[in-house]
Every structure is written in C-alpha cells, then in structure tokens.
Image (cartoon, rainbow, N blue to C red; front, side, top):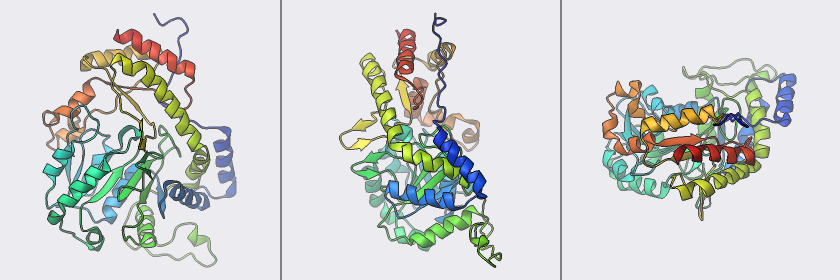
Length: 403
C-alpha cells in the first residue's frame, strides 16, 4: 500500500555541508591531521559554549567516561551506579576499570532511573553515579545531588581527588545532550563531570569523537586535571605532537602506561564548523519534535517531553511508546515502516537483556519498569536533513499502522 510515492528516509544521517568539507581539506593541507591547533581550538570553543573553564576533546564519549573514572582512581572494590536503560557504554566503562556495575531500574513510565531505588543501592563502596541524559533531556540533578548529600556519611575516599569531593561523584553520560539546558544551566555546568558524544549519528558530529567537561567552582585544579586527561589519552606521554615540534623539544617522558584516545585535527575541523551551525540545528530539531508531538500525543502515543518552562532538550531522539502493543507487534511495525521507506530504531534494549550483562549476573526480571519502557518503544527518524514533507510522510505511515 506504500508503493505510490515511496520515500527513502534514513534514521540518522550526518548533516554535513560544504563548509565542513572545506575545513577538513584545509586541515589536510595544513600538515596537521592528528591532534594539533584545530583540536585545541575546538576545546576552547566547546568550553565557552558549555560555560566551563576547560574541555577535553577525545575520540569518543566512551573514552571520556573511562578516562574520567581512571583519573578519579576508580577500580576494584569500588561500585559505580548507572541506569539499566541505556547504551552499553554507560556501564562497560565501569567493567573496564575493574569496578562493580550497579544497575538501577527506571521509574514507572519513565526513561529516567528510579531515584528511590538509587538511594537504596548506595553503599560505602559507591564512588560514582552515572546518570544518563537520554534522548537529550537532562536528568533531575536536584534529586540526584540531594541523594548524594544524604549518603555522604557512607563515602570513604581512596585518594586526594576523591577526598576533594568527599562524596559520591556525579559523572553524566550526556552522549545525547550537548546543548541541552535545565534551570538556566547548560548541560556540562551541573554534573561534576559531563561526557559528550560527537559520533556520526549525534546532533553535533566530528565523525567519531567526544569531550569531557567539569563544572566550575568545585575546587578542582583545571590545569592539573586537563594535563591528566592529556596524559591518559596519549600513552602517558609528557608532550603531544604539537609540543614536540618546538625547536629542540623532541625529548619526552612516559609518566605512566596509559591509553590512546586523542581527537585528531581532521575530526576537530568538522566540529569547528558544526559548532558555528549548532544553534540552527537545535532549532530545526525542535520544529520536527513539535510536528511529531502535535499529531502523536493526541493519539495517545507517549514520548519524552523535550521542552518546558525551565528546560530544553537537545532534541536528539524521538522515543515513541505505543501503548497496548507487545514487543512482537512493535517489531512488526518497525519492519512495515522500513518497507514504506522509513528506517526506525529502538532505544534501548535494557542492558540486562544482553548476553554480556547476563553473564555478569543481571536478570531483566529485576528491571520490570525498564522492560515495560522497551517493549513498545519505537524511535522515529529525527535529524536536520528531514523536510516537513518527510515528517508528514513518517507520521502518515505510522498512523496507518497503529489504527
């Protein structure tokens, strides 16, 4: 029934213009294609945009989260809490550093973790909480920090940096939320550490890439912390390639055996132009979300509220929950949407449903709310290459399948 005027609508292609392409060519012709002046410039511009003193650009949000945990000294014997309803990176980094993963179910009819359960699972071994700003909407950080303060007497720091906080550290997986705001603060100004993704499917892309920022005013030595991220991201080497180009400055030290996850100038060149365009990209996402809401909400389809009086999402994903359908029916709708030329997705299959997490002892039966969020969720295409005609077509196809 969709043969006439069949469209081809991908799920989330990158929005790349000639301006980004020209900047990449400039970078390639400059002689600097690895970490260099463009990466440093992008770090400064991201810090200014977010409203923090420093930003560190890396090759992924995953690297940003893992390096933050390592710099905080998180390891065996420690516990780190995150949501059961997220992508694996939020939890896998905990396993990477040797700490124990503690998953929290979502609240009923919510994509956000259940904060009453969060309070219950905190122990004297809890060192970090990783909230997830899913779909680009910032979490309820007021409640999170209230819980952290209420459990402060349990906290036992293992090193000087943990002692400076003298409480559980809040490190957000904000892979979706670059540009989001809550109560007058940008994402990056609220959590202790905030980790962004600039992957190809994200609102703001550097092809692969990510960044970490930390909020101002909590007593951190910005220069020291920035240097730690530089060391950890480049083999523990005391000088990066840019610093080694200074006359006679070839020699360097290896401070400790570290990792390799730096951003390149080619990646950063894409980001420099994306940042110039970003406010317009966010506005277009808002327009598309409003078009979806205007048609789908009256039909009883549930989604995250992306905008309100004191908050604004980055509008990264449109999570549509179709009430009254089973997982099998949801999957059939996704197939029929694809047959009509509309590629949809699911965000997310809860972590306890995957083999790796089953092998760690997790059971989806213990995360009933997360499972209920998942079974009837369909993520509709939401990107800035969609035309109004595309959006109307998507809505028309979906409506025809759920009547």
